[in-house]
Length: 149
Image 1 (cartoon, helix red, strand yellow):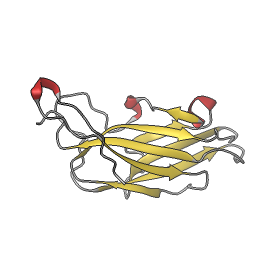
Image 2 (cartoon, helix red, strand yellow):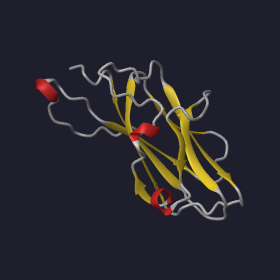
Image 3 (cartoon, one colour):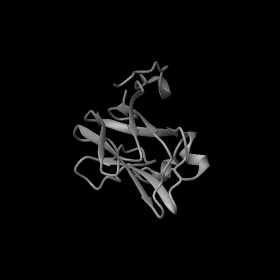
């Protein structure tokens, strides 16, 4: 469920937006898009945290993909490596440039125009994995325009 966090006054005396979170879980058996949670209309993604119990031991590659239900499945995070120890176990913050909706302009083009179900998928190649995960995906977001009061 969304968990509101407290937040102080925003820039230029404008009221701040309450940062909220959703959490879902992806396992090695989630090789088809799995529904994780549904974002409300006007949500703007801030960032994802990903953490896992163990890195995947797949032969060649192992990645998490985060997307929109009914979409390509990679709208938010195209291919996040969970094979290497640096990202497959422990807590990590994927590079914001990996987020497909990432936008640094003052125009809020990344806000969702409708409720969006976020999906997670695990994909591997090479020798099949025998260990790895599960991975927790936590999404931090605000609603409305970031620059609005």
